Each structure stands twice: as structure tokens, then as C-alpha cells.
Amino acid sequence: MKLTLRFFATFREAVGSKTIEREYEDGATVGEVLAALEGEFDGLEGNLLANGDLKPQINVLKNGREVLHIDGIETDVGDGDTLSVFPPVAGG
Image (cartoon, rainbow, N blue to C red):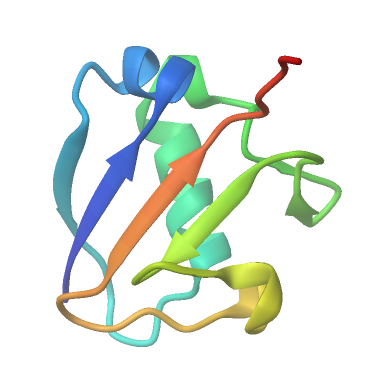
């Protein structure tokens, strides 16, 4: 299945693009996709997942909905879905 992956701020820099498309096995989860991304891009390695969950302050949206409000990293993804990945943001 094909997914569209969108990256923001420092994650966009790490990937080198705002949007990429990748193929994954049917039945893949958000956690599996994020683990694959950490393995593919050096700048993402260790920045998305920790101790079997999303790192603190990381936001991942599936088709515009925060995955933490679905099934977290166990959220299933399907063909044509879009995952948006946001790094921690500081400001005031």
C-alpha cells in the first residue's frame, strides 16, 4: 500500500523534503512506519520512538487526526492514507 508522509520543521530538514511517498505492507501500523522512517533517515533515528511508544511531544496525525486519540502507534494505516509528523515545538 502507498502512504503519503508529510514532515514539518526539523523533521522536514532531516528528510530533505516536505512530502514523500512510500510503500508499506498491508496491515502496517503507525509504529511500524515510524520505525522504518527512523531506519531510512539518519536525522530521524531515535527521534520518533522511545521505549515502544512515541517520544514525548511528537505529534503524528493520520488523515488529520492525532493518532494518540485513535490507537496510538498501533493505529492501522491503509492505502492512500497521509501521516503528518511534527517534532516538538517550543516557543512562547
